[in-house]
Image (cartoon, helix red, strand yellow):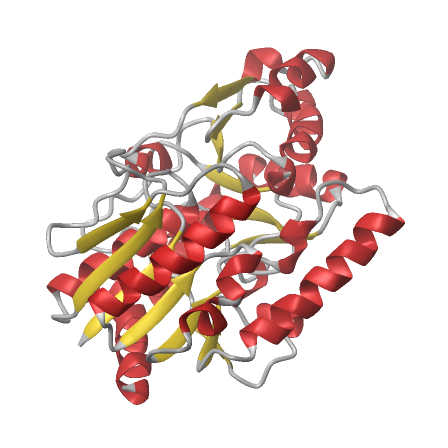
Length: 365
């Protein structure tokens, strides 16, 4: 079966690229799919993640101007899809244009839309603005309209179902990035970890505010944050304002993130919203207990409160810091939760998730 993924770029270090690398590689190498991927303006940029050697890549170069961009996108996409002639198309584009590909392409075969983020991504700050609210409502309605033309609309969590009033929705979780021979943390290092790019969504200022309370009780512990940096957020400056700069370190993304998880004792997710929260499953498979805001959507599908981690009401900074302090102070609790976390992570083994995808593809073909 010939499977075509349509996305934007796959050369970055973000979650979508990580998930797609796992899925596309396994489908091509273990399930014998003829996998093709169409990207936009990627050129010859090296891939951050390993996609294997069995995938055929196609790239479309688009001009900067809006009118030229749209015209070229439509014509080149139609031409390329006709040449590839896939049995199934799976669209991994969270932008508005991705919702209209069935109409742009004339639906040449069965088509699936994969939603990798929450609708909350349209929000850029906590301030209400009537114009932006109206724009969001219009955008959502356009998404509903375009999404209805897909044969299946795949979301990542049960919570995501609440966002999409569509009849074609189905839930398939993200697969683990690590599954076999994963090292287990001994949970003895005095390191609390966070992983993810710096932006409004990830809520790192909330994490730093919570860390103030942690440092008062446990000044010998350190917070490590890995992810693409965004200087305009001034997170480093915030650590100085909060007087926690000596215990907080920021790191660029690394390919061997498994070693980072292995050397930490607590994982934190301070996001305002998520599509899934794959970093939680990554930490848990290394036996690291998690403290996460119960944001929309994902953490509540992954973390079982008080069993393998803590789910804190979204935005409750004091509750967040109290949970971290509890895990630091109670070594037995940390070990017990870490063991339970590793067991829960097995629910998301790649083989299990990819079998679900294979079943879906074959039911449509």
